[in-house]
Image 1 (cartoon, rainbow, N blue to C red):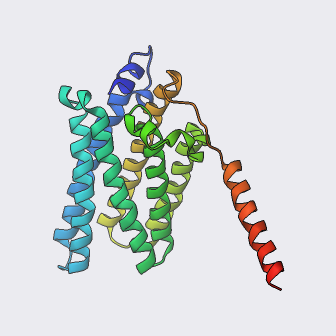
Image 2 (cartoon, one colour):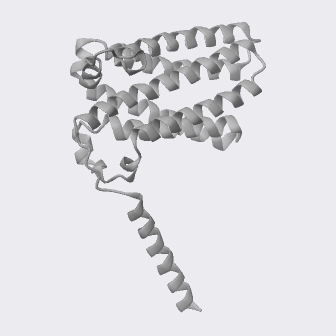
Image 3 (cartoon, helix red, strand yellow):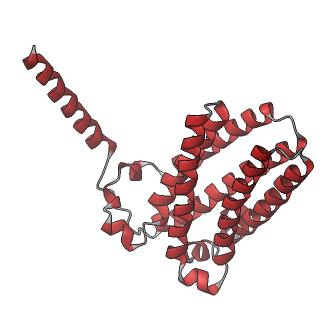
Length: 237
């Protein structure tokens, strides 16, 4: 966790710029969310769907909790990049789950949840893998998503989380559900800040910051494909 370590060495560091402060707050928030959601399940009427949702919700939280506890240990710092791959895998599963939920029950909540998970996944991949061999092996430096600045990623997540929370608060009728929604939003904001701080460290130290890909190239390829398709249709006529 060298990025967080180095960021914490700055003088007069504010809490939201301290990697360790963010990690401890994330752990506390996750534990509070698990306890709150468990009480929500126990206090309910035994609805199987609600119980299953709580189990799935807490399972993903438990894996993330393991990650953040691990990065505080000496072994976790040594194998930090491996832990990041584990974290990305968790969010890949979450993204697939969010997509299936969106398809099965389309709603504003599922839309915001899916958007939030996808942005986080892209943010994670294009940040946490930059200092690894995977970055070079999969030529991720050519990804156009590297064009998006750190601040833009972070504020995009903030906007999606805030609007998603508003929709959740409007639709929630149970007090326990309200607390869980607020804790979920706080966790995502803290988690996004954690990624932000590590990316800030990478940018400052210029680690794999060269970006060979851009969205203009994709636009050109799409335009060429459309022009070729239109020409083909004209010849058929």
